[in-house]
Each structure stands twice: as C-alpha cells, then as structure tokens.
Image (spheres, rainbow, N blue to C red):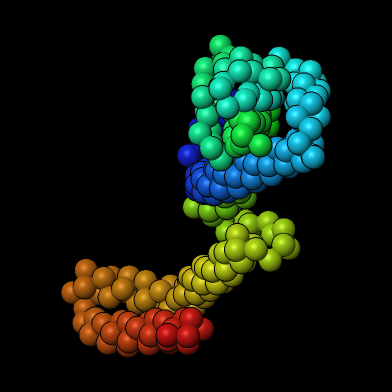
Length: 298
C-alpha cells in the first residue's frame, strides 16, 4: 500500500510533471509522425494508381481495342470485393469492361466516395480518370488499407504512450520511496539530537548526490554543536571545581562574622575578608568565561 507522504513528496510530483511533459512531447511527435506516415502512404497510393493506369493505357497499341478491354477485364477480375475499381466505357457510355457499371469521376486524380463509383460502400477511393482513344478509363483504389495501417499506427503510439506513462509513474514512485527513506533518516537523526543524543549522525551513502551533500553539511553542523555543548559542559565543571574552595572559605568567613555579631564583637575583619573573597570569585568567573569565549572563537 502506498504511503500518503510518498504520494505527496516532491520527488513523486516532479516525476509526474516529467511524465506529463514526456507524454505531451510523445503526443506531439506521434501526431507529426502519423501525418508524415499518412502523407507518404497517400503519395505511394497515387504513384501506384498512376503506374497501374499507365500500364493499362499502354496496352492499347495499334488501335487494338480488344487488348485494352482484355487488360481491364483481367485487372477487374483480380479485384477483391471492390478494394480496387477498374472501369472502361466508350464515348457513348457503354461499359466495355470493369467491375462496376457506372462511374462519375472527374479527369485526373481525385478522392471520391464509393457511391460515385457505382458501389454501395461509402468508403473513400483515390481515383485516376482519363481517356484512351476516346474511351473513358478509370482506376480507383480504396483507402481502407491505408486507413487500417493508419489506425494501426495510432494504436501503436497509444499503447507505447500508455506503457511509457505506467513506467514513468512507477519510476516516480520508486524514486520518491528512495528519497523519502533518506529524508526520514535525516528526520530521525534530528529527532534524536533534539532528545539529547548529540552523537547521532545521518548515515551517508557515498553517492555524492545532493542529499549526501546536505547530510554531510548537517553532520558537520552537528559536530560543531556537539563540540560547543561539550565545551559548555567542561566550562560548567571547571566553574564548579574552581569555585568550590573559595565558596567554602566564604561560607566559613560568613559564619565567623555572624558568630561575632551575635556576641556583639567587631566582625569588620571577617567582612573585609568576605569582600576580598567575593572579588576573587568574580575574577575566577571572568577568567573562566573569557576562556570559554576564546575556545568558541567569539
């Protein structure tokens, strides 16, 4: 089951953005490729129709109309369910040969529906029409095969795009999961430091990437923090050690001054000593604080 933080992570969002850009680029490239392929197929279709038309027209030699009729009849017989149409009619409109009975086609290359070529289908046909010795010759080929190839191309691009999208999303999830683990490691380390475990450090992978660089910098900051805290602890110990003796002496002097005051005796000497001891204590404080400042670099 996917963790919500992985889905919300920056790595996963960047992967989704990259996937969207990739798919948009793939879509534009697919459309351009499809148009180029279709244009090339149509050009090849025109060339094929023109070559077939010229081949049939050249069969009319020395005024032998029978050869022309026979050639058209042979081509018409090889046509499969009107995928190709061949038509030959004389000047009066009488059908001489072909696999259709009527054709309404302009001279030259044109794109017509099937009902214009004497068939019931509404498929589009690429048509070449002209005259041979006063007879109308029409050669037409259906766009069905070309359209089928175009549909296959579109389907191929669609499946390729879908597979690429799935791979991109899965890769995004994988990358997000890896990055999330490393970020969690940083978070755990900082939590331990916040709880007082100053020796905790972020594990480095040695990959040299940005997270490794960030972890290295954080570990350096934690090292300096640990050193400062240790210095503060040492200063506290030194203060406690260096002030223990003078504070004991100060306590003894104060007790003596109090006893003399209770006996109504003069305690001025003890108070002078107390004052001198306080001055020495202040000097010790200042010296220790100065040492701490020097060690911290301030």
